[in-house]
Image (cartoon, rainbow, N blue to C red; front, side, top):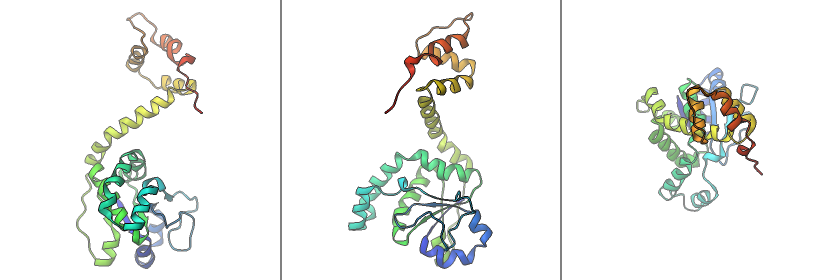
Length: 230
């Protein structure tokens, strides 16, 4: 499940409500300008290997939006632009939230209380884009109850299909830039994929051709496809 809570509510309510075994089990994702991911004596502690507390500054407001927020504290002023930023971070959102929840991990977004309106937008975006709803622990502890939450895992997976395909294409693109990457891709390709790649690079294939040899010579071992960055 996906949860959210602000740091102040966590300190005053969550530590007393949840047993330590649950507090250690949760995956904490800090999206905040005011909460750090280091070990603390405040309950947000990790299991010893620093793996269950991570901070993702790239999902927070950028510098310009943060300045607007600091000056005006107007959610409507930043909502559209913040969502545009999140549109460019779908792969991170998928890895940090969607993938973990689909694999039955409990993820808690942590911020400072004054940053709750920002997280409201993030939660709204995740629901709109991936159909993943969030349990508001702030509201639960303050009001004693929350509305029912329904998680449709199939719908969440379906909404992430296009993104996963895009991520796979991106990985394949970067792999193709180096000989080592092309070797790895080649070793994991089906015959159909090899024939498709040959056609992409302008090599025609007939039924008597050695597809592997053609692809090795024309693409995998061809230095013309190497891209040197930097």
